[in-house]
Image 1 (cartoon, rainbow, N blue to C red):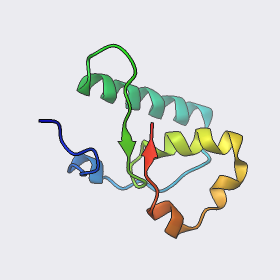
Image 2: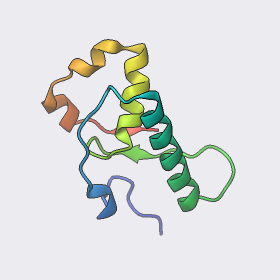
Image 3: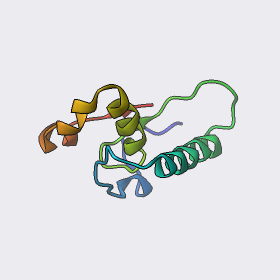
Length: 88
């Protein structure tokens, strides 16, 4: 039975600070790591979606892409950051 997507595993509990300013190299590296991890979990071809906690390092991938279109997103309060859940 698949696990509840909202239940954090011990690995997912690694805390990461919100960053909207990754360098292109950092962003590419994190994207490749994220995609590699998804492929390791789900080997089926096609579209895969994932819920990402706000304190997970992969949330910074979404933050940086969002900030490219909406620069003001980096001004969110910590309270809003803490209540965010990212869908990738």
